[in-house]
Image (cartoon, rainbow, N blue to C red):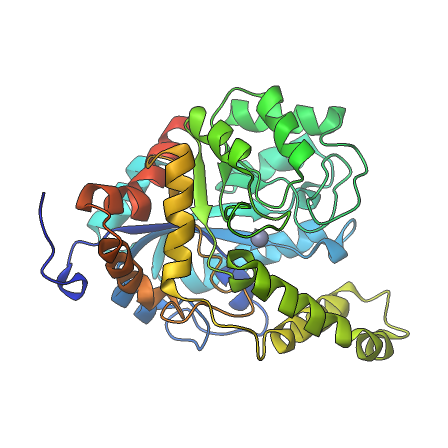
Length: 370
Ligand SMILES: [Zn+2]
């Protein structure tokens, strides 16, 4: 087994990350993809060895039902304009396309939808997004859709309803990755019953290590791994340590009165409400306990121990999280995570699987290449 002299000399580090919200950062307020103060830009990509990335077109569920699809299309158009047209990255829809982009030393960019509310209950709209290059969808975000329950909302359907099962089957047939991050336990159980294809949780951690509903139980880790699915470890400190989650919740609750005052008379302006919510999440992380690289590695170790080394990968959630772990501040820091994994005893072949190969193989099993 090859031994690395030092991760900084690891020239052929291949990182393929399963989730970021950079499409939103590039949209509002508008910043450059070449260089920006957020988590992911061209410079950080090069430094971090990031060669392929799944970009989520995330739309706040507050914009549903009437404005969500429009927002997703605007995000996509903005990606075309700022990222794909100037060839900073190449939009890919197949493994061959990804390999070609990597050979050209360009970032291979996959597009996913984040939040089933975006398709407005319409399998036809899902087809349209497919034709625009979208190859996966997170079934819900933080709120239930009309056909699937979210893990952070009051159950409405007890999982998937008939339309939800139809959409999941359609995704499997089309060769779109079914992403269960944010979905409720019952929704995940229904997905696993509805289809036999491999599924992913693009940015979810272990509930055993951080007991919040947003993370995966060992049973789900086992079930996803058994059908050769994929789980991307999320860097969000609140999803890594329960203590930090509780601190953020408590801080956020303290702002309740202030939020109510600022949003009075503006409850019919979802964009404004969404901005305010984010602003207070950013404020709520102040003073919370630090989360380190080793805490992230703990989740990788646990998921690998339960589901095997072939199911686990990275789902950073960069540009979608209000704070980051110490030593893992942005996409330039992937080599530091590799070093932390080496220190923990992961072998080269295992690190390569976690950094990129597991996600690549998962997509290869799911995509129906045309
Ligand atoms: Zn998310």
